[in-house]
Length: 609
Image 1 (cartoon, rainbow, N blue to C red):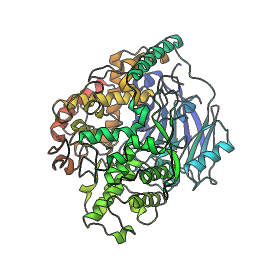
Image 2 (image 1 turned 90 degrees about the vertical axis):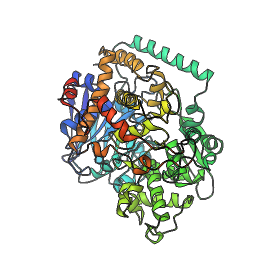
Image 3 (image 1 turned 30 degrees about the vertical axis):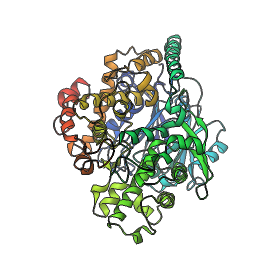
Image 4 (image 1 turned 90 degrees about the horizontal axis):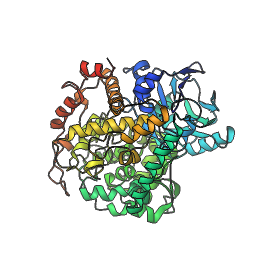
């Protein structure tokens, strides 16, 4: 077998037994890998009705056939399970160096089942798995845990682990690899904590076999030469200022979520923009394995009270902890970001939940006595303190640990939570970027831009521009971007490179470049139609899980604030998101009925019936 390793590792945490299983080539071709394998095994073995924090909820880590091959940005792995934050499927994605080492163990995926009665970690040494006690690691942060595990296994191993937030089952706890890379969304770290699994430590044993190595090198050279020629003419913003540079773009379009999504512009945006991050705190760029972009930011803060160093913040953190909380103190935002990385928490949900709490206090629905301190818009000290308290589930942090929906619901105002399927939105206002609203509502994991990102064409004109203010015609192109995202996630690639350099230059975004890489790597002779259908199959497989978990059209929703209240300021002033009008067309494009359930003919066409 080529590209794929052809095996999965099963880890039964209840019995402390590990076993291997061969993978069928047809399953691999039909689902590609990564996210596709996760969807396949969740439907085959998971219980959509299970309590996400119970022993009955499996957790799947999976790489793609291009992970670790040297394909540009081929350095991703997926974590999939049932989310404790949403009750829906998860697709939590991370890069760095860990995924390549994972692939080199000889396994395409690891399936964790059951629950250990004591803390353990999984050590895989050149393909040989072993469960070891993690009693001595419980309570340590992700950086301490990583350093300790490298000392007791192998200095060149790679580590993915949880911090105290995962141990305490904060509902948006993340899994951190290589210290600062995050499988961040939907609470995968809480699931890992519920299983008493502290870490996965891996030392690989070799390179990934290629079906046609000469063709792979040829394709790689063509793609990279074209990319480098482009960035010589126009430097890539992601390289210059990282994702933090997006602050200027969303502010200029009037879609920078501000004051818990009450506004679309922020007066203090220049103080939290990527240029300011680069000027004040950047030490150097960082890149995942095989990445020609290098969007990561290694930073250091020396501001009094907010000292620290680490990686980030990314754009989503700057929106969630910055404009959304009306905070323009970049040092405080960066410090709260460091805390999230070290404790193992999603920065989007953390920031959005604090912003929700600020509005609850502002409107008199939540008392400052209950919070345990003053809490007002723009309070940089509160951001840092409450982030730390959430990781420890200390005081009011125990309520913040539930996420914004449950917090707002507890105080009688769930309409103030910026969520779809109980998951908080990333930083693009759908009143001024209509397709983003449709993508948030129909995302299988709840509010997300990484499971299909219309911001590329609505805001950044990639591959072609489309007016962000109109809703007509957005359903088909949004579905196409979601299918492409599924293929990217399944192949083991990063969306930042793939959308720009490995997809057709039209709004159909056919995965033409990915096709070339996959066929050279795997020898599977995909046709373009077969590959595009695989992306559609993954989306529908996830929808089956959602439907069986009780999700339907009622859950493909946005808060009334976004669909009924016109945005009050900026270039998008006066607009609302026309979700319902787009949703009917979207279901028709997908071959789903009006309640959001795939039609029998759709399932039969995709071999899912």
